[in-house]
Amino acid sequence: MAKPDKTGKDLAQFNIKNAVYALVGEDETIKPLAWMNTFSKDRNITTKTFYGDGELIVSVTSDKKMSGAIGTTARDSDFEKDIGSMYAPDGGGIAEIAMRTIKPIHFGFETDFIGEDGIKKAKKVWVLNMQVQSANESLTQDKEDITESTFDYNYEAYGVNLKDNAGTKDFVDENGQTIRVYTISKKPGEEGYETFLDSIPEPKAPAAQ
Image 1 (cartoon, rainbow, N blue to C red):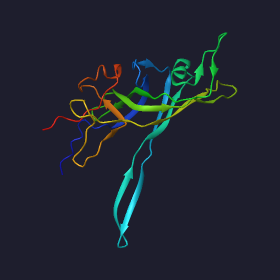
Image 2 (image 1 turned 30 degrees about the vertical axis):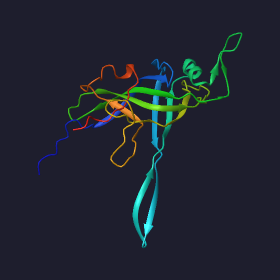
Image 3 (image 1 turned 135 degrees about the vertical axis):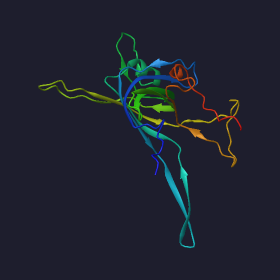
Image 4 (image 1 turned 90 degrees about the horizontal axis):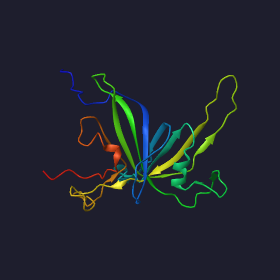
């Protein structure tokens, strides 16, 4: 049997860097998130099964959000002011406050990957319409070596609806259903890759063939 063509397939993915974010619905200015070092993503898919005549007939999925955590080497006060968990009181300093509302953001980053050619490349990724909570913080006393603290921002991402090719309205498939987009990414060589993290992408359906 001929060897399957794996051109363009990722062999391994590693590293994470150059995080950015923008508040949803405002001027959507792209801002840096300092010193991110981890990112996790969990899909929260539930399944409802239907039985008839003692047999499984069909399974229907509910896929409303994904969740995870953004880890940084230290808290980013500018980021936390933007999402509403920090405040600059009169007299100086920074106050950590109760979050009265959650301001959604779009969140972008780069992650490295290699394919069969063994060349390291950077993929650029946006996570769309994310609600981020104030950081969970763990501080530990130094002993013989420095013990690095951890800071994790839990999030839930709700995505955006896929637009039609003109970008004027939500795309609706042949069954009358919209399509929810949680993340969108681009690799080197793809159109718009160089500036992909410079603005918020609007996912669109391909043009009709």
